[in-house]
Image (cartoon, rainbow, N blue to C red; front, side, top):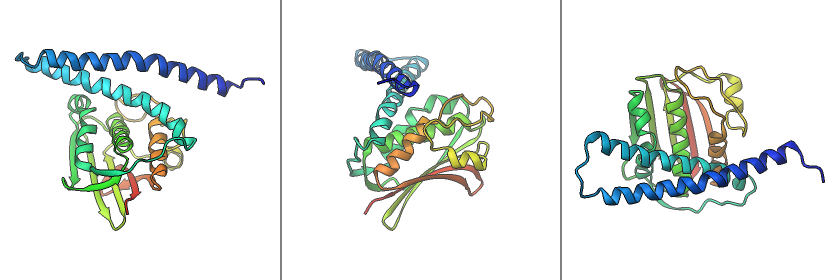
Length: 233
């Protein structure tokens, strides 16, 4: 059987994921050991901040690699959402920690409208990574000193979890295609990092695995807001 370019691309991605995951996992493990060794040492604010940033970046890189693997598995139906009661404020805080350094570097203001006691039956691992993807996207496109808004609420039998930002609005064509696997958004924001839309494709697959949806559009003065809606019983 003749291999297609698509098969070759898939094999290359699988090889890269394997080659990257092992050293990154080792890096995360060594950072954890280093933190234990330094527990009794009074670090300077710069040293402590750098260690926190390294932890967050290693965690984020591993999550991105996991998204690549799980996106394929979700698309094939090989991964199902394992629901359990999850306190969403904790997941939001954990996701924010992965982009804390960039939020500070770009002087972005984070606003939260989320009940600290809000609990929903969702797959904690998948939903935390969706939040990470949406926050990474917000940091990428929000101009310096802009706003990132996170909100969450129960509406009957549905959970609505949203991440918005004050970056440039999407065009009609972008809104129609933004959750596709190979979508690439125009780099119109100041300082935006170039990248494909695999993260948003992953978010769509997680929403569907929960029997929910994800959509994007403007809301209440925000040019862009991604809204995840999940049935929660």
